[in-house]
Image (cartoon, rainbow, N blue to C red; front, top):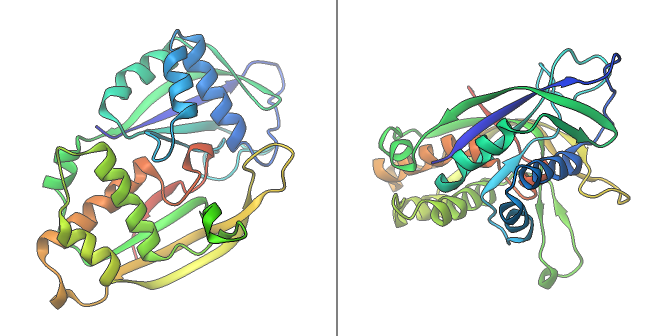
Length: 267
């Protein structure tokens, strides 16, 4: 069952710490450390070592405006997306027993945990609508990275519809074999999606300390079915289910270190 957990933080000292501009890798380290310290060392190791698609996603430190937490932030949080049903209770329990977390040079205590959403895959699919247009608000930069066999390693910062939905489809199929989307949805992804509108900017995101940040797209983008006559209501409902799934899984690559966090919008 996909779940979205919000971890609300408070500073432990008299002065609120000022986080560095990029906290994605540090939140990843803090999250895995919290699992390990709560007695889930095997799970922490497995989440770190498993190859994509990984069963979780993380945000960097964010504030009350869904921006990077900084000196003027009144609230600080990070969010955990859980994609595998078996992990939700374990992760919640581990975080509930965690008192303090260190993110980069900043020390916080966990003020509260919020289970913001949780929906079985079957419910996501059963309540999906045969829509033909969807808008994402990309909070943290999204990008796609080429593989070693594709020549020089490159970053593809524009969220092409086929890339975005194919990645979501791959994750859905990996974690929801009990709720298959079917070939009609797969066909629509590769043959019948286009960008309807976008207002995106380039933004940097740190992948690893000591390495220059990469660049990705952030902002707003709307996708649509190019020709509704060449698809089916079932395929469109499958696409709609993937869109709703994105708030748990994120979009694009490196979602476990804070990239591709999205909210759903109107457009």
